Image 1 (cartoon, rainbow, N blue to C red):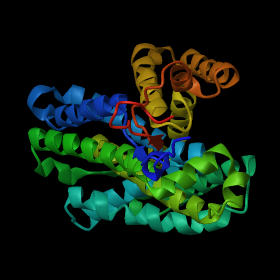
Image 2: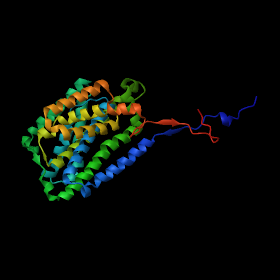
Image 3: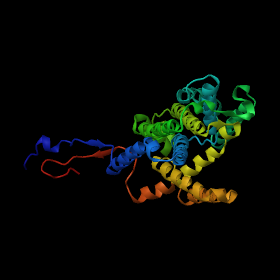
Image 4: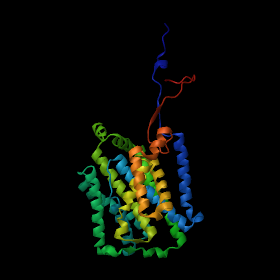
Length: 348
């Protein structure tokens, strides 16, 4: 019997592959889309820029809700509280205190970040539907406070008159840049987070909360961090959206329709995936443009669509696609790859 050299029987070196061909293609498309987004003032009309901004807001707020519900297990129907808070912070800082409005957007994000801490401490003891109802109650409290707060002109609302100091072209350039920043922070930030070591814990929480906790994941701490991060992300969306609107009122700032839109987008596209958010946002945007004029009937159809997907395709449209094709746009997993030997024989 011939002895086998130790080198031949040693375990082969294993590599970890984190990117896929589909992911590389999606990254290239995303970079091209961001470049086109930033260049919009030179090729698109003001109306087109406003429509694209609205679509970007849908994507961003839905991704923040997806991060909350799809990974942290926190089903909120009150994220509009932080959108309105940041929107009002922008108007007060820029209109009342004279701060540069574009700087005020980012300074104002301190408001939802600070408000999210006591809000979570108040709500984190609730679970399931009680937590959801609690988030809606908090949003309504914010709306009632703003309705009676003289600093924000009470129920009459505020107008961002300082924007008249900028030309239409300058405002378009600012809106295009803010759209790109908003997507980078919400979608890009979520992708970066999910690819980090914290992302492993979040994916484990998404799959099985109890099992993740039993393996050492600090579920409470991660939930708190995700809640604050989602509050800041939603605040950025609110500030950008209401800057484009040039006016804010309590009813529009804390409109529960934003929660409805986020839930629809994530449920239709696929909860727990960035790809599903993009698909769902595009579906909602097109449906809203084509059928929004039908009023109540339109919302009934959207509700029935959400119910049908929840019953027959719980993982949404992206779940159906990924079941058939293994081609993620935003790969967050880690795959072990055993390289081939030099003689061409691959190690099993």
